[in-house]
Image (cartoon, rainbow, N blue to C red):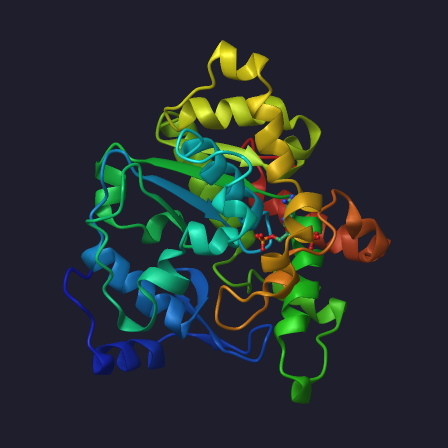
Length: 318
Ligand code: A3P
């Protein structure tokens, strides 16, 4: 993004009119801006973020594509980073949805032309976003702040995205078929997609600047949460001590943030944190490999072919 001043309403409308547009998954149009697909409000918020956000060296920014485990990552990072502030029995994660505790830049802080006052937030500040690497404000790049990226295998991401968007789709439109969803996904038309460009943007930065960008995979978190939590804590600059490890702090954090625990909390069964969906829609199955129950062999072939082509030579595999 090249803009350095606040974009006006007219500028924003002119910009949107000039961009390629597609119908999207939930009836809201997606626009292709600088190679990535996004709804209008997301682009406006990203521009505002670009113009107004000043990163601090101690900031931690969590990044994901939608449906790759954002809620989980927010909970884990919050529990780790602020573990000396809250006891496990009185942790805010028990009463607040992770999206309320770790705000999105584009859906919350910079949404609807708001300019948040972030200067009073206690350090280290924890933020989240779905926006692609190339859209991040300069100050995130230039400061010593840390970026944690969580990726999920594209088959499960697609299935999760499809379920989720069908819940958010207006009834009048009827459900989107999985075949249509797959076609859109393979064309790269998903919120903040293409999926592969999003992942590669952060993957390549992780290779170039591993101390700046940590690249995690949902499947690895599922396989060995303890090891991955140690990596995460160390990367965020607050490694677990031997004492903490011996006292079961890592196990407590993993239990507190588990799918079972979070999804059973009242706030996550009945609350609403982000405008257009209810918290319970954020918790479906939370498993690896659920794609097997939905994708046929030809569908898997179609998706794998695109992924192999797009990720070829990058070293990123699923
Ligand atoms: P499924 O639809 O496959 O169940 P996001 O948070 O980015 O919207 O991702 C949502 C996906 O993460 C959903 O996947 C959801 O069930 C899963 N999820 C939510 N909380 C989780 C947790 N604590 N542990 C593991 N997976 C979780």
